[in-house]
Image (cartoon, rainbow, N blue to C red):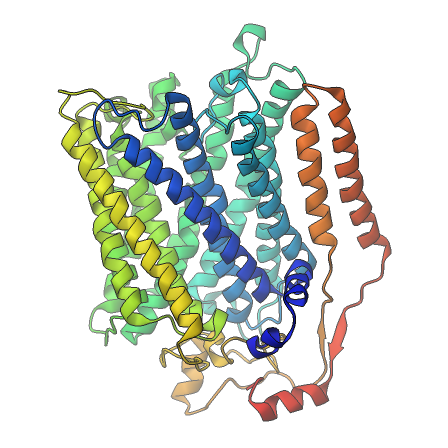
Length: 623
């Protein structure tokens, strides 16, 4: 639906459209807005943490609130900001890159989003109901099982619901990429972004169940009186750590791999060259995915697993640096000798290489088990993983948004504002986190609320806080750019970068509802580039013009998710008063009733007829 039509409709109609949509492009918008909102909330929590650590003996916030801040900052940024923003880009781009009209299961795609959103909202309701979770974002037992109040219960229920949404999304993308590629698109012709989403979806499929199991056990311990993690009653607190990190380490790669793929596409486009070492990049991606499951206990070197286990995980952790190194060199070789265009997307991408490499180097330092006894639970670790997550994931998200924004919204983000946002964020990032490695080596522990005068930590912490303010300024300029672009910038063409190599640049920006008038025929790697080299305007179609079958919108994903949200409150508060079981039954009733409706009602979708498509082609919509 074009924006012009949307503006003519009332606000109510637009809201209803987004509540019921199963179109992957609109679901991408939903993920982007909600993920962006949680990103700002997580950023605000980070600013509060840095203000508290700005000077010695500060009393800006209380110790208890500080614990809630660090817990919610980590949880929000990983689960509610980074994941959905990546899902926004996956939804917007993957079906277009493989020449599909939508994902394999549009209904489930919508359900995945609403589950994520309601889980995230449930988690954040805890701020207003007597206290947020306060056991750290890793929620280690026995701290979490004995934490008073309902904060940790919100964590358990919120992540259960949100995680179910992510799992559904991962399975959906897996099936989409396996089953819905255009004719001629073999696996070794898929763009690197699609490849990385394919590997990421596999990781989601195998990693998230471990988190789900852990959260279920924690739920039974806290809400129903079991003792899985209570050592006094025969439980084992370390089991939580294993379950959490069997999920948590692949999660790091779930976050970074799609952006590795995006960087590959961006470097290729703006160097005006095909990606160097395509097949090596594919195998490196698969290898990272595989090794990502072999390294989880490097988070646990100090829990007493013994030297043999520590050694095995140390070696596996160092091994994962090899495929990552392959990628870094291939990106550099892609740029080597290319006609480089320094767009904002390219600026973020180039900045990522040294930033992420520093994160990788400190990661190898942490992988040495003997040395890790010194680094563990100090600010060195905080510096390390922010170099990976911010220097990798956040830079990657900014690069991807600049690159694919015209495809999502039909307008190119303002380049001057894009570069203006980059510099304060980039400088602020290094100021904030580089110094933290040294603070850690000087003995500053993680998660401490205050430090004292005379410990030599004041200057480093002040520099770190100043850096955080610069990052906030960069983020604000980016938001200004988004508003400015939507109001001022002119409409983008189908291929605004002029060197687009993959299928998404062969159709208008933003794409029509059905993506492709005719399914394209893929004749090689970088399929659009192949056609351009043959002097053709667009893609060669693989089928004659005919009716297109599309799915119908549905409110059921929203009501299924709303039911879980209501039931979540019931589960949390039934400990205090059994009357809350009414909420459990009402919520589950709504969820199961919606599922039953979906099962019994024949929803056969609708057809877009050939005549309408011919009209669209005349207007230039489907071209």
